[in-house]
Amino acid sequence: MLLGLVLQPVFASSKVILIATSQAHTVALLELYTSEGCSSCPPAERYVKKLHTDGPGAQRFIPLAFHVDYWDQLGWKDPYSKAAYSTRQRDIARRNRSRAVFTPQIVLHGLNFPAYKNVAKAARLVNDIPARASIQIQVQQPASKRLRAIVRGKVLAKEDRPHAGVYLALYENNLVEKISRGENSGKTLNHDFVVQEFFGPLRVDDQGSFVLEQDLSIGSERIIANMGVVAFVQDLVDGSILQALSLAFTALP
Image (tube, rainbow, N blue to C red; front, side):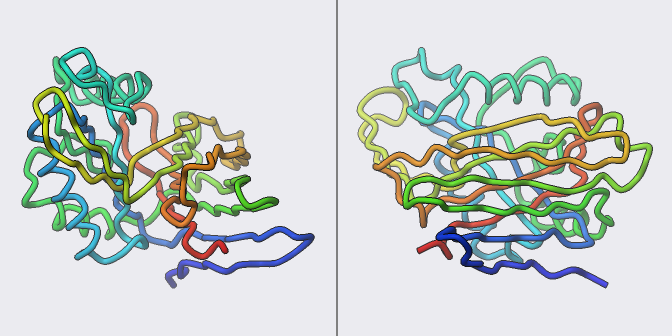
């Protein structure tokens, strides 16, 4: 029996709480490594957005866009780039036995995926895999610009637990940036699924259980309705995704 996505606001002690619970099948997690300094990245971002818009929804497909920083010295500094995202991409390259990193790069289920046209089909194959972990995300809002995420769950199989790590990403949609230098000079770029904050990995205990609690930085310039969180559990050795779960903030007042 598949467990449906539970998304319900709960009002208690002046706090709004959103809850999402993962399903019995594995959700396909797509990581896009991109940069505003790269002229071939905007088409890749549009492609990923179309996959999300036309696809089966967050219960089966979750995209995240990691803006890397190694383009920043080539004419335009990407305001969303972070060195940690470049490091994560290099870790993926090592697991995939690749000598180089590049943009745009699509990583599906922890693996480099160069064949863009087959992403939707591959995502459906990932969905056919029973989930190897369960996840619940709870988001509290004690004040208008203050959020706290609590991620709980369990890695199901004993053999998966020694190498399992839990991650939490805060993402933002509907970002617009006017580019004045570099390969995209003169263009206005639109971004979605941009990872603004990234936490982890948190290791699980001997029973496979985990609790990750994190205060989230929501500046006054950000629109909460454009944001959300993604939690996922990953095998830190082979890079496979045990399970992923997304929770948008659109239901928050």
